[in-house]
Image (cartoon, helix red, strand yellow):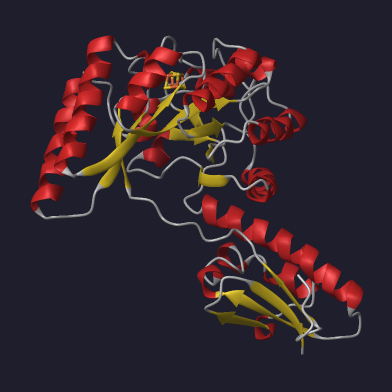
Length: 353
Ligand code: SF4
């Protein structure tokens, strides 16, 4: 953006601040409703919850919601994750929807979201979700690549993945898409096409879970025999940073990158790009890419002018990268620490000194 009052200043935004929704309280239902076991999946190890009857999971959540009500804490958003929610046996699905409706009436939750597979959706179940106060349906698409879907034993085609997403949109419920960069059979080009396909479906948010090798999954055997090589952390961060920029430009929120670091996760991951600071690393690199472009534009216009960057304070923690690994990269753009100031505004500004 140009302005006539400060002719040698360029203002711009990165990752606009979005209104924060309620905190999410997940109820993990590992493998519940899943018609098959996917190659890479170890939901029980990933979430730290063993597969158990749905009512037992609801019973555990009940105690926590009661306690929150008693302490007058703000309403949460429930999330039914870890299985195929829309393919639960009818009585389990009814129990979950009744549970959500009850705690919504009590004021302990504002609503709920759920995750499912794209081939387990139809108008009737989506209408039930909507009537029960569902706030979002997240679809574990993982990929739109036929090869990757087949190799990972997902059991649906790319066209079915798209149809599932479109059904949610038609229902009027917000759509979330989950992708798994690096999954077996997915080439880097196909992973890029997955980003484009997801953007074209205009979801409200995406989650990007780079493929990890979990002990006990079928993928572990392939990895042990050398038939699967996961992405390394460096390539993964580079890919996710560019993907984030593409989603941000399309106005799509990236709700999560990488599996949540629950207790015990580390010991169950045999290989793959797992890192407790993955999200920060990715956001820092994405910001660097964005700034590099803006600084080049600025220098193209004012080649002889030394510059200073004013940056929103909320980026201060991650700006210089993980363990300051981006300091040399910024220095090569002419941006040393002395040339960066933090302010309370939401926009960045590059200005002549
Ligand atoms: S990846 Fe999803 S659909 Fe496949 S087994 Fe795991 S929870 Fe079930």
